[in-house]
Amino acid sequence: MLTAIKKDGTWITLPEKMTANLLAELRMSTDYYCPCCKAEMTIKAGMIKIPHFAHKNNSSCRASSEPESAYHLMGKRKLFHWFLSHHYQADLEAYLPEIRKRADILLTIGGIRYAVEFQCSVISETEFIERTNAYQSVGIKPIWILAAKHLKRRNLHEFSLSGFHWLFVTGSYHHPFLWMYCPVTNQLSALKNLTPFSPRNVFAELTTASLVILPPSQISPRNCF
Ligand SMILES: [Zn+2]
Figure 1 (cartoon, rainbow, N blue to C red):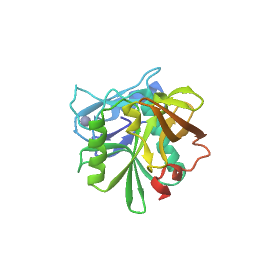
Figure 2 (figure 1 turned 90 degrees about the vertical axis):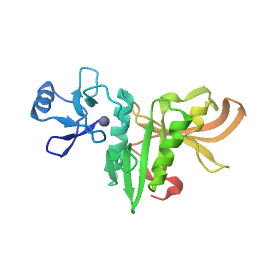
Figure 3 (figure 1 turned 60 degrees about the vertical axis):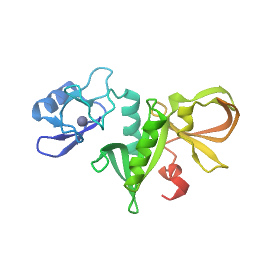
Figure 4 (figure 1 turned 30 degrees about the vertical axis):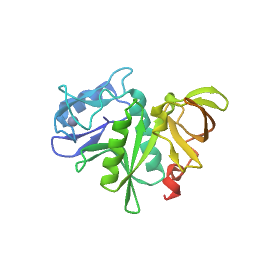
Protein backbone atom coordinates (compact mmCIF):
# COMPACT_ATOMS: atom_id res chain seq x y z
CA MET A 1 0.00 0.00 0.00
CA LEU A 2 1.13 3.52 -0.73
CA THR A 3 -1.10 5.26 1.80
CA ALA A 4 -1.56 5.00 5.56
CA ILE A 5 -2.92 7.00 8.48
CA LYS A 6 -0.52 8.78 10.81
CA LYS A 7 -0.86 8.89 14.59
CA ASP A 8 -2.47 12.33 14.36
CA GLY A 9 -5.18 10.99 12.04
CA THR A 10 -3.88 12.59 8.85
CA TRP A 11 -3.17 10.58 5.71
CA ILE A 12 0.16 10.10 4.06
CA THR A 13 1.06 8.83 0.59
CA LEU A 14 4.64 7.73 0.12
CA PRO A 15 6.65 9.34 -2.67
CA GLU A 16 7.86 7.28 -5.60
CA LYS A 17 11.49 7.54 -4.58
CA MET A 18 12.99 8.24 -1.18
CA THR A 19 16.41 9.11 0.09
CA ALA A 20 17.74 7.17 3.07
CA ASN A 21 17.43 10.38 5.10
CA LEU A 22 13.78 10.88 4.27
CA LEU A 23 13.05 7.23 4.97
CA ALA A 24 14.70 7.48 8.39
CA GLU A 25 12.83 10.70 9.11
CA LEU A 26 9.46 9.21 8.18
CA ARG A 27 10.13 6.11 10.25
CA MET A 28 11.12 8.17 13.29
CA SER A 29 8.48 10.86 13.11
CA THR A 30 5.30 8.93 13.81
CA ASP A 31 3.53 5.57 13.75
CA TYR A 32 1.47 4.47 10.77
CA TYR A 33 -1.80 2.58 10.72
CA CYS A 34 -3.81 0.68 8.12
CA PRO A 35 -6.90 2.66 7.01
CA CYS A 36 -8.88 -0.58 7.00
CA CYS A 37 -7.98 -2.73 10.01
CA LYS A 38 -6.18 0.02 12.00
CA ALA A 39 -3.22 -2.29 12.62
CA GLU A 40 0.23 -0.79 12.79
CA MET A 41 2.16 -0.55 9.53
CA THR A 42 5.79 -0.22 8.70
CA ILE A 43 7.50 1.43 5.73
CA LYS A 44 9.38 -0.92 3.46
CA ALA A 45 11.89 0.46 1.01
CA GLY A 46 15.18 -0.52 -0.49
CA MET A 47 17.40 -0.45 -3.53
CA ILE A 48 14.85 -2.16 -5.75
CA LYS A 49 11.74 -1.98 -3.59
CA ILE A 50 9.25 0.78 -4.26
CA PRO A 51 8.57 2.48 -0.90
CA HIS A 52 5.33 1.08 0.51
CA PHE A 53 3.49 0.32 3.72
CA ALA A 54 3.09 -3.22 4.99
CA HIS A 55 1.31 -4.55 8.06
CA LYS A 56 3.81 -4.99 10.89
CA ASN A 57 2.41 -8.33 11.92
CA ASN A 58 0.94 -11.03 9.74
CA SER A 59 -2.46 -9.68 9.14
CA SER A 60 -5.76 -10.99 7.97
CA CYS A 61 -6.67 -7.50 6.81
CA ARG A 62 -9.54 -7.64 4.34
CA ALA A 63 -8.33 -4.66 2.36
CA SER A 64 -4.84 -6.00 1.97
CA SER A 65 -3.46 -8.26 -0.70
CA GLU A 66 0.13 -8.34 0.44
CA PRO A 67 2.68 -8.63 -0.87
CA GLU A 68 1.88 -6.16 -3.63
CA SER A 69 4.19 -6.31 -6.59
CA ALA A 70 6.28 -3.32 -7.65
CA TYR A 71 4.40 -3.54 -10.96
CA HIS A 72 1.10 -3.00 -9.14
CA LEU A 73 2.39 -0.19 -6.91
CA MET A 74 3.92 1.60 -9.88
CA GLY A 75 0.83 1.10 -12.02
CA LYS A 76 -1.72 2.45 -9.62
CA ARG A 77 0.41 5.47 -8.85
CA LYS A 78 0.85 6.28 -12.56
CA LEU A 79 -2.85 5.82 -13.29
CA PHE A 80 -3.66 8.01 -10.27
CA HIS A 81 -1.40 10.80 -11.54
CA TRP A 82 -2.94 10.42 -15.00
CA PHE A 83 -6.37 11.26 -13.54
CA LEU A 84 -4.97 14.09 -11.41
CA SER A 85 -3.19 15.63 -14.40
CA HIS A 86 -6.54 15.84 -16.17
CA HIS A 87 -8.11 17.46 -13.07
CA TYR A 88 -10.26 14.52 -12.04
CA GLN A 89 -11.28 14.10 -8.41
CA ALA A 90 -9.30 10.97 -7.62
CA ASP A 91 -8.28 9.22 -4.40
CA LEU A 92 -5.47 6.71 -4.28
CA GLU A 93 -6.22 3.51 -2.33
CA ALA A 94 -9.53 4.87 -1.16
CA TYR A 95 -10.87 2.81 1.71
CA LEU A 96 -14.64 2.26 1.64
CA PRO A 97 -15.71 1.32 5.16
CA GLU A 98 -19.27 0.47 4.13
CA ILE A 99 -18.06 -2.51 2.10
CA ARG A 100 -14.64 -2.88 3.72
CA LYS A 101 -12.88 -2.65 0.39
CA ARG A 102 -10.00 -0.55 -0.80
CA ALA A 103 -10.20 0.65 -4.40
CA ASP A 104 -6.90 1.22 -6.17
CA ILE A 105 -8.29 4.56 -7.31
CA LEU A 106 -11.67 6.08 -6.55
CA LEU A 107 -12.93 8.62 -9.07
CA THR A 108 -15.83 10.93 -8.37
CA ILE A 109 -17.28 12.51 -11.48
CA GLY A 110 -20.54 14.43 -11.46
CA GLY A 111 -21.58 12.76 -8.22
CA ILE A 112 -20.94 9.27 -9.59
CA ARG A 113 -18.18 7.17 -8.09
CA TYR A 114 -15.98 4.79 -10.09
CA ALA A 115 -13.56 2.28 -8.63
CA VAL A 116 -10.58 1.79 -10.91
CA GLU A 117 -8.94 -1.55 -10.25
CA PHE A 118 -5.57 -2.28 -11.80
CA GLN A 119 -5.49 -6.05 -11.48
CA CYS A 120 -2.06 -7.63 -11.50
CA SER A 121 -2.45 -10.83 -9.52
CA VAL A 122 -4.63 -13.62 -10.81
CA ILE A 123 -7.89 -13.71 -8.89
CA SER A 124 -10.73 -16.19 -9.00
CA GLU A 125 -14.02 -15.54 -10.71
CA THR A 126 -15.68 -15.70 -7.27
CA GLU A 127 -13.44 -12.92 -5.96
CA PHE A 128 -13.92 -10.83 -9.09
CA ILE A 129 -17.71 -11.09 -8.82
CA GLU A 130 -17.66 -10.46 -5.07
CA ARG A 131 -15.66 -7.22 -5.54
CA THR A 132 -17.78 -6.09 -8.47
CA ASN A 133 -21.02 -6.74 -6.54
CA ALA A 134 -19.67 -4.99 -3.43
CA TYR A 135 -18.91 -1.82 -5.43
CA GLN A 136 -22.25 -1.93 -7.19
CA SER A 137 -24.11 -2.42 -3.88
CA VAL A 138 -23.01 1.07 -2.82
CA GLY A 139 -23.54 2.66 -6.24
CA ILE A 140 -19.91 2.54 -7.35
CA LYS A 141 -19.16 1.55 -10.93
CA PRO A 142 -16.07 -0.64 -11.20
CA ILE A 143 -13.60 -0.15 -14.05
CA TRP A 144 -11.29 -3.13 -14.31
CA ILE A 145 -7.92 -2.75 -16.02
CA LEU A 146 -5.85 -5.85 -16.50
CA ALA A 147 -2.08 -5.82 -16.10
CA ALA A 148 -0.69 -5.95 -19.63
CA LYS A 149 1.89 -8.53 -18.59
CA HIS A 150 -0.95 -11.09 -18.56
CA LEU A 151 -1.55 -10.75 -22.28
CA LYS A 152 -0.54 -13.81 -24.25
CA ARG A 153 -0.07 -12.95 -27.90
CA ARG A 154 0.30 -15.81 -30.33
CA ASN A 155 0.80 -13.71 -33.42
CA LEU A 156 -0.36 -10.37 -34.79
CA HIS A 157 -4.11 -10.97 -34.40
CA GLU A 158 -4.21 -14.13 -32.28
CA PHE A 159 -4.32 -14.08 -28.51
CA SER A 160 -4.78 -16.74 -25.83
CA LEU A 161 -7.46 -15.82 -23.32
CA SER A 162 -8.12 -17.83 -20.17
CA GLY A 163 -11.18 -17.63 -17.96
CA PHE A 164 -9.29 -15.02 -15.92
CA HIS A 165 -8.88 -12.75 -18.97
CA TRP A 166 -12.55 -13.07 -19.85
CA LEU A 167 -13.52 -11.61 -16.45
CA PHE A 168 -12.16 -8.26 -17.67
CA VAL A 169 -14.00 -8.19 -20.95
CA THR A 170 -16.41 -5.30 -21.07
CA GLY A 171 -18.30 -3.37 -23.73
CA SER A 172 -21.35 -4.70 -25.49
CA TYR A 173 -22.25 -8.14 -26.79
CA HIS A 174 -21.35 -7.06 -30.32
CA HIS A 175 -18.27 -5.04 -29.35
CA PRO A 176 -16.51 -6.79 -26.47
CA PHE A 177 -13.08 -5.54 -25.48
CA LEU A 178 -10.74 -5.40 -22.54
CA TRP A 179 -8.47 -2.72 -21.10
CA MET A 180 -4.88 -3.36 -20.21
CA TYR A 181 -2.16 -1.16 -18.80
CA CYS A 182 1.60 -1.49 -18.55
CA PRO A 183 3.29 0.81 -16.00
CA VAL A 184 6.72 0.09 -17.47
CA THR A 185 5.86 1.53 -20.89
CA ASN A 186 3.05 3.72 -19.47
CA GLN A 187 0.78 2.46 -22.23
CA LEU A 188 -2.90 1.67 -22.16
CA SER A 189 -4.11 -0.99 -24.56
CA ALA A 190 -7.51 -2.10 -25.73
CA LEU A 191 -8.00 -5.60 -27.06
CA LYS A 192 -10.97 -5.18 -29.38
CA ASN A 193 -13.16 -7.15 -31.76
CA LEU A 194 -12.69 -10.36 -29.82
CA THR A 195 -13.69 -13.34 -31.94
CA PRO A 196 -13.13 -16.71 -30.26
CA PHE A 197 -12.05 -19.44 -32.66
CA SER A 198 -11.19 -22.11 -30.11
CA PRO A 199 -11.86 -22.52 -26.36
CA ARG A 200 -8.69 -20.60 -25.44
CA ASN A 201 -7.92 -18.46 -28.46
CA VAL A 202 -9.37 -15.38 -30.06
CA PHE A 203 -8.77 -13.21 -33.07
CA ALA A 204 -8.57 -9.64 -31.88
CA GLU A 205 -7.19 -6.23 -32.62
CA LEU A 206 -4.77 -4.64 -30.18
CA THR A 207 -4.49 -0.86 -30.02
CA THR A 208 -2.00 0.79 -27.72
CA ALA A 209 -1.31 4.39 -26.79
CA SER A 210 0.71 6.25 -24.20
CA LEU A 211 -1.11 7.78 -21.23
CA VAL A 212 0.74 10.97 -22.11
CA ILE A 213 -1.55 11.51 -25.09
CA LEU A 214 -4.72 9.73 -23.96
CA PRO A 215 -7.49 11.43 -21.97
CA PRO A 216 -8.97 9.37 -19.11
CA SER A 217 -12.39 9.59 -20.77
CA GLN A 218 -11.10 6.75 -22.97
CA ILE A 219 -11.74 4.22 -20.24
CA SER A 220 -15.10 5.61 -19.24
CA PRO A 221 -17.98 3.17 -19.54
CA ARG A 222 -19.91 4.41 -22.59
CA ASN A 223 -17.99 7.67 -22.50
CA CYS A 224 -19.93 9.04 -19.53
CA PHE A 225 -17.00 11.07 -18.23
ZN1 LIG B 1 -5.06 -3.58 7.37
